[in-house]
Image 1: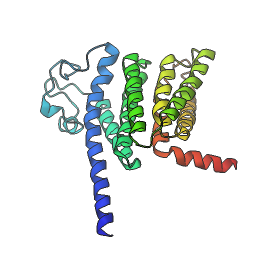
Image 2 (image 1 turned 60 degrees about the horizontal axis):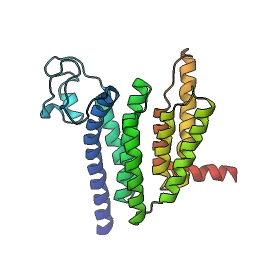
Image 3 (image 1 turned 30 degrees about the vertical axis):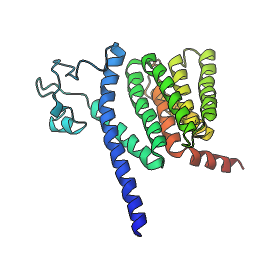
Length: 266
């Protein structure tokens, strides 16, 4: 291996590691978001506390994943078991951040997609628990990501605000049509989330949006079949997690899957 190639590999490895660390920290914050936003509480104050006894969590007990393992998954004060969902959110976010750093050579693009996927982790957990996709998260996110896409397009990051707008309208509009036809089968929260995914992924290319939609529908269909097989016919199935799965699949393999599909048709 040449010295230049060795340096490039080292730089990439460091970037992935840094993204993973940032993802773990962001994931720790997202655990607070998933708990407090549905209860309409502030995500800034007070500090994190035990959901059982209310004791404020010390800094040394708030290290992502490691603190959970060191405490055996229990509160230091009351010894009540802490849900494993918390470290899983942190690990998932860290893994997704690392994956985007490896998949997208440009730091800005990697950070943009990582932010979207991290947000989708939190929204998936909230939707799975409460059957809602909170406007308190989606509306500010639409504005923030629209600005970031515009900045990326204007600064030569290879993004396109026009494609982003088309993705927004195509994915969001498609689910809006479904929601109007079958309001009991598709909520407006899903429509807004699809529009957000279309905006961000569409700025990279419309093939990303097509794969995100196809993967979400496929995952949702498989999920519905699993629910029916379990005999839970009247269970409401949240679609947000499946939209998140579709977005992740598209982010990491969108162009490849789109090209493979087109080859099958040719």
